[in-house]
Length: 332
Image 1 (tube, rainbow, N blue to C red):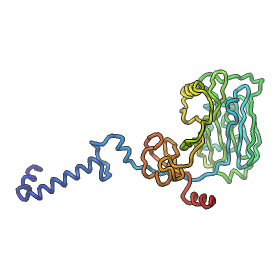
Image 2 (image 1 turned 120 degrees about the vertical axis):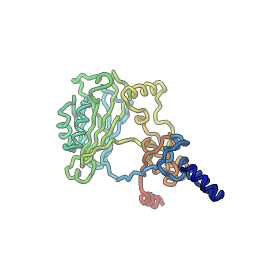
Image 3 (image 1 turned 90 degrees about the horizontal axis):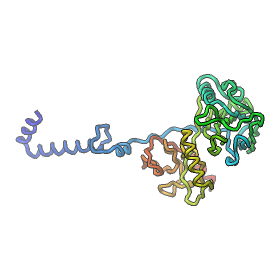
Image 4 (image 1 turned 180 degrees about the vertical axis):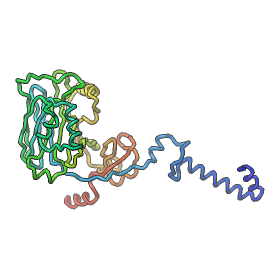
């Protein structure tokens, strides 16, 4: 029928026939090459071009104040036998509770309980959720706005030198930070922070580091605190002076534990300039790679991360334009 229609059309008017065929050709070519942005079967485009044209969604973020801060002081000197030094930085009076040899299974069961019905806002609440599945507990009072160094160590009478081979059933150390004053628990959305810390021993010599940090909210949710990878300054120097042999050893130990090396590396000195224009202030975080390397003007032109070339699924801004304007006024 189509052939008969075209022949009849050609006999009626050759010029009109040519115009109709040319229009059909242009429309078909546009559909195949995706000129119109319609979701149609793609024949001539490869998978990378298809992903590149995918719209990048911008996450709507909500700013939440975290009253807790915890980091390891001199991680190279920490071990199961000599202990570990932790530095706290809290906005309110808090309690630091350390659980040595905490059960891996019981810890994640406790986090699930917090999500469903049981709020972990005190050390006693976590202890009840763990069913006392730990080897030793110690607690310290932390004053607000004071960066205190807390030295933690297993008692010598426990005679524990390691926690066995990987995969382990116990974490070497789990540190819980909670608000000491009950009134402050109604002010902050984040009511506690759980830090899972690896400490080297005779069996597993991976250097000391924080493996996971979980922020527990009053509404029952908990979030895994992730490190953002800022664009490195060209003038920055490496933060660690470990030898290549030590780095390769740590890499193999991380692979055994099922951890990513990129997530465990300490942050370097960072630049605030956009990696593309070298002029704007870095403000956008790209997901899932977590590279923070683009300014407000350049982020709209990229569907792939300029640092690792991974396709960007979502992105969010570190601060709004209003906050940036306030910072500029303060600097002036």
